[in-house]
Image (cartoon, rainbow, N blue to C red; front, side, top):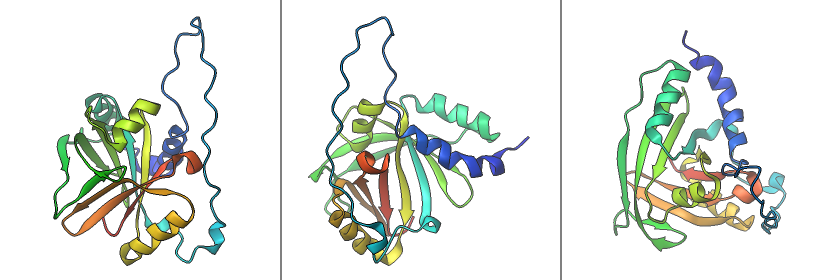
Length: 202
């Protein structure tokens, strides 16, 4: 039985809950380190004052970072009763015409990627290599989990980024450009429980 329609209603809530989960815990018999103090973050401004809020109908994407994309892709295919999605390698490298930066610096990395069309939005799986990247940073910190949710904001992209900066969010976690569009990973997980991906168009 195909359960895609049912899962479209519940997957967003279920996956966002993963963003607050830490990496797997050690054996209960082992000594446990004291929890680290909560990160100090700037208090966001009143969302109602934003001229251009992120509207829910602009939501386009959930991105999940995993340690084994082949296993995860098979599991999602079985859950959704679909063929196993194709897995490809995405090579990210800074170029003058197509910049790619991590934490504000030119960078390079390889990602194993697959995409599942959920009808109006996509579910992405990423497996990062060992090089520095937002995806590797997230996996080393949390293990498997939701790295970001994406929004398509059209011509308002620059204004949305400025507003998020004004709210205290670091918008330099990752920036990548490609033909006809770009993607900006906003470092928002300490406040929202998940990072944001802001795109002019998908």
